[in-house]
Length: 128
Image (cartoon, rainbow, N blue to C red):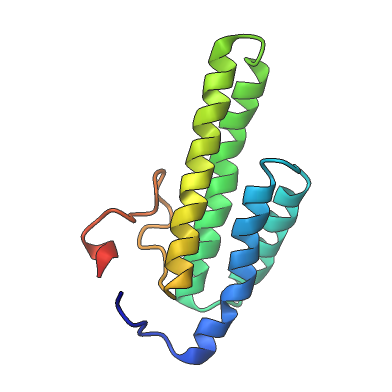
């Protein structure tokens, strides 16, 4: 594991983005936690250092990109295709949260926070 290049004062700012990831994961069971996480991400993103801002952008995109997919799955839930869409959405959200938590734990930003997939977590640059 590579040591972080971020000063210790920036490492201490990991509490709020970690809370947002956990609120998103809890949202799988208690939907009310997700809007709280979105509000925190919008509020904290403005004053966060760049590496933490990448996490907040990643979190907000997770919400806004996932919302129409979840809505489509719920509309189609009368058929099996709806349940497949919801399962794919859940796997995508869990994977993005896992990547974010892992990178946050190592005090690293998200290399490509605007990506549709996992934020560039699998790229060679992300491994550095």
